[in-house]
Length: 422
Image (cartoon, rainbow, N blue to C red; front, side):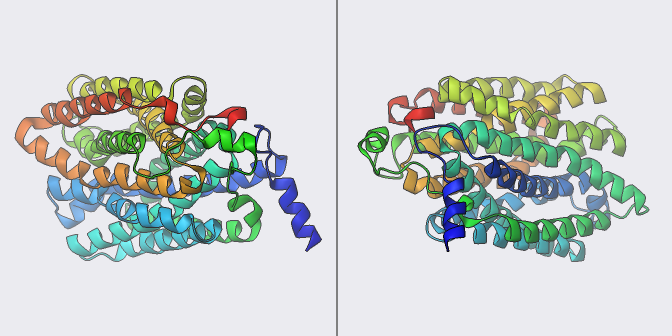
């Protein structure tokens, strides 16, 4: 008992400082690895979509829907998982999510047609959403004094997974003689092994940290200005911004590989290489997190939306070479995953009191991935009516303007303070 208490004491960060025990960073690395696996797993399907589509004979709208519809699972589970994370062991939730998405990654190879493939994709998303809600709550609570910076490192982990996933998927497919199913088997095994390691190694004294609590006059002052309700003005605006980020990111991710092959006539190797640069862009998430901790959180996000609008238009109307497309996918990773995804999540966490951090993480998943679940279908439908360039202008350039307006309406006086004040 005393050993357990001493371990918890060593792990517990001081509420009014931004220093953390070294052992906490080892556990952070493990959780980052689990998020990398999550990211690599979700990039696998759109990377191999041309081969999967060829086998099943799906049209562009069906392919686009399957590519992003797994995010419906993340959206549906987001709010319930957020409430769950605020009430039960986050560690148990993380492991449960990993087991679910790993199992249904394996189930994908047994799909017989459109509808059962759609079901497997959605359930995979449910598992990923359960894991993510708990991961975000752990990081946002334990590293609350610099939550944007440390959440940025989580998105760096996502970027590594998103970078390695497409390359590993293509390599495994080629090595197996062209089978798109083999990569799904390998990714399933990796997910299960990592879940077992986290279950054994990560202590609850780390995973169940509650963050800043009103236990003293100083702590109470740090949160006294915060609204007591979950659905306050800033939460609603950040929810809208997250929806826009979902349309922007997944409108690109859903059908880009089809566009690159059918319109730009890229080879499979060129597609995998260029697509992987999206993950490299995500490696700049720690810079994005640092910037939001140093400058006005909402303005940083608004600038990211403006840049994404330019990138989205250029990707489908200007760049035609592998090098040009690689640059634009890289910048989408920087400003979409890095500055947008990272800081919208932490903005939602800063918009609520500490005891609601799990629910705010769930709201993020529901908003961003709810939009993402139909982003691919919308991109396919718009392409059918306006062509690739017109579809990109509408979904990837005009939509972000709504996000800019929402960010400019944020009331920064009603956000949880960072650094020593948190």
